[in-house]
Image (cartoon, rainbow, N blue to C red; front, side, top):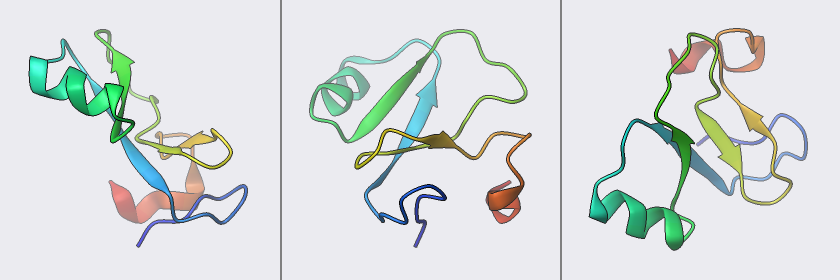
Amino acid sequence: MKSCPKCKSNMIIDIVYGFPSEELAEDANNNRVQLGGCCVGGDDPKFKCKSCGKEFGGSDDNSYDWVR
């Protein structure tokens, strides 16, 4: 299970990139995923902590190398 590198919470959601479908938009409205936008870069974060708001897991984040 993933945990936040800042606050150690396990309340982590995925950050999803690209144009959202209706189902994905509903998941975002229900705080099950975070929409990351339509433009995707190489160092974009992959996860967001629901407790403290920290975004992490991008290519410059060494704390979660196992995710890639």
